[in-house]
Image (cartoon, rainbow, N blue to C red; front, side):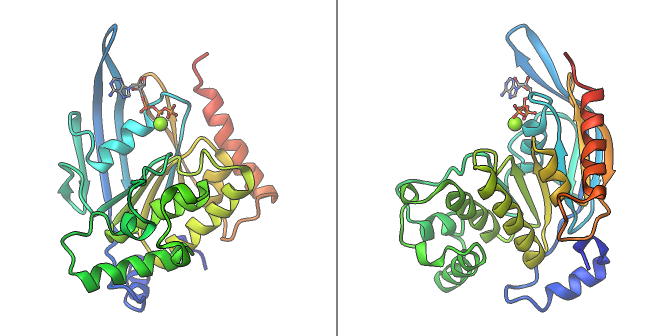
Length: 273
Ligand SMILES: Nc1ncnc2c1ncn2[C@@H]1O[C@H](COP(=O)(O)OP(=O)(O)OP(=O)(O)O)[C@@H](O)[C@H]1O
Ligand SMILES: [Mg+2]
């Protein structure tokens, strides 16, 4: 059974059997009427009339052309952008700034080079007691398969390993929502496929809500419960496409290809040339 087939009650019941304390999956209620930036040629409306609800435990992918506002959208969910018209709520609480209840993974891993892998994952857990902190770090390094690298420094890791550490770091704060901005864009094709499988495994193990931005349509069809297609100038939601395929998904199946084609058609229909 895929995660998307589970009811919220079943997800919560499964949570209570995991080794970590039960995680609360976040529900996002997003209304962004307008987000503007001061451009060199005057004010620029980057996002407009966006309305989206993300269910607890849902895996949502956002696709759209370069510059259509995907990163800005994700930064608003992360609480890194707070100047906009509208309201974004996590579990009915307005998002007013960054918080551990939202873990963020960027395209580049942003690990601190002077800290070991273990200390990078522990970064941000300063409020936890020492045993709690080391328990969490071990759990998440196990989850991403990097326990044996805990004493290494980031410059000794491959790109894929570094992104796995970044995911472990984001998860260590026990976020209700995991936000990922093109996390695998810099990886080679094979590593990227492995990382997608890894991310699905982590999502199933940790049962968190995920919002992932990608340029890669196949990645979105492989991962998502729903795909949000954005169009540019100003960035807005053009369509929401459900991916009702059981997991693990077969990338070469007719159904998979059909959904990939539908997403591509949506994107091409709204491309500004
Ligand atoms: N801090 C900023 N100040 C001014 N303009 C900005 C700022 N951040 C982003 N923009 C502009 O907002 C628009 C959307 O940028 P954003 O990075 O959100 O797009 P994107 O969809 O993530 O693009 P890409 O796919 O290339 O990563 C772009 O025109 C960009 O130049
Ligand atoms: Mg971006």
